Image (cartoon, rainbow, N blue to C red; front, side, top):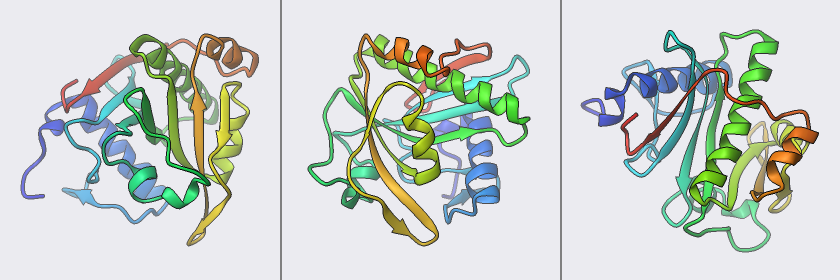
Length: 203
């Protein structure tokens, strides 16, 4: 990219893209594009992408996730359809959760709390906006965690290898039972951090 996209005009999004670079590229060693040596962005960070970002009062990033429409280009449909035994779930009320990012500059207990707050925010966002389902691609260890959260989650197919990673396609259904399920799973945690919703590159 020759110039920063409009999304980087938002301080919240800059904090998120910086955290994504530190986690997915610096820590996990994923082969992803980097902007200005600081920000991790890819072709799906377009004007239609939505973001949920948890920040403290000082603007420090704690957790975030990107939501992609499934009736438009998205990871599962475009890059990983082989993770689905049947058709890739798509539709106007289905979103794909991608780049679920927990800031690496946190203690283990802080990361767990940030994770729980973000999962709760994702469920609340779905219920408030008419989203009925989430899909995603997860590495196997992360998928086993997601299964234990208490919401209705199933694999879309078998496990596939990509280099050193074992990947699974997943499907989460959200309805009036979801919040009770998260509470039973010990994951429900209302946001203590500031929750920023960003859509179309504007926070």
